[in-house]
Length: 428
Image 1 (cartoon, rainbow, N blue to C red):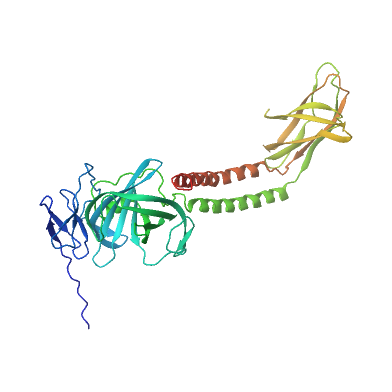
Image 2: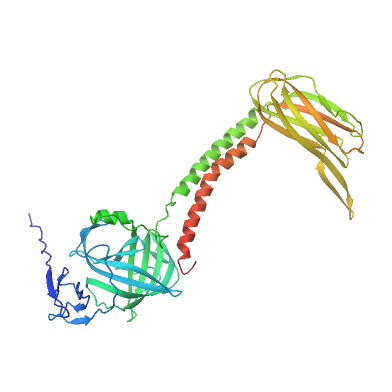
């Protein structure tokens, strides 16, 4: 059996800073091009055996990385060590927005980056292949792998602080033009440096708690603020599932409604004809003979048919249980007007009216009818018909409203989340 190849141990050495004399660890020896003195923050040339000073750090600003240099752990199933740290910023409408980048080193894998802005984290890797659309970034959509990415923002980024070691030349004040494209939880990014060289990378959004756990960091990560460009929506998939469940419930309610329509008996329980004379003085109410409503509790329909002609009538109905005194009351305005205007006929209202009383129990009932009308109007003839066990759509409409309300509310919350995301973009 062939022997498995052995990996050389990763060496860590130190260099002395020519500016302040402090010793600085070099964890990526053989890869490091720049090293930043952790004491005076001068940028040193690690590739030069003499370790010359490339840039002295004179600014008063001090940045303390949340993740200490030298921290080891596993992020997205890859062992890594934090070896470098830099702060970068963009300026939009005279407002500076800063984020932090941690350089992750694995001696047997490529360098990766861990970025943080306002409590939002991304693990970023450099791409070895170009996305569709060519190497030069623009505002068009880009495709890479199985995802299509929408342009989010293009801005000039400036390095304001560095610490640790880097496998490329780095200076405070370095600038690049960055373009970001998002397909949450992924972000496709392109950076164009001063020499017009383009570097494409792919980031994946990672929760701060997951990073703290993976790197065994003490305490808790900073709470995220706002909505980040590629932050996955907490409503992703939820709204779709809610609409799917709502569709099933609507289908079930529709079947029940159709079954109710088909099984309704529409049994006439009472019918009577009456005359109401608005000009007559005295009592304008009457009571019908007692009639029976049998069977299960169901809707009762009261139909009113009149001979109204350019006039109106109010009918107040009280369906009263003769045994218990329970009353179901409803008032109806019935009116019918018509005529000719500019050579065309018109009409308004109807001489007929129907109203439904839901879920009336069986029993012996009578109707109390109270009528009103214009005092100068001629007598009105009207008939009243009471129909038992009619089909009603009210419960179905209420059920529809209750079924679709939750997914609509969830959809609006998802839309508001996306609106907050894109408000921070070039396309807000």
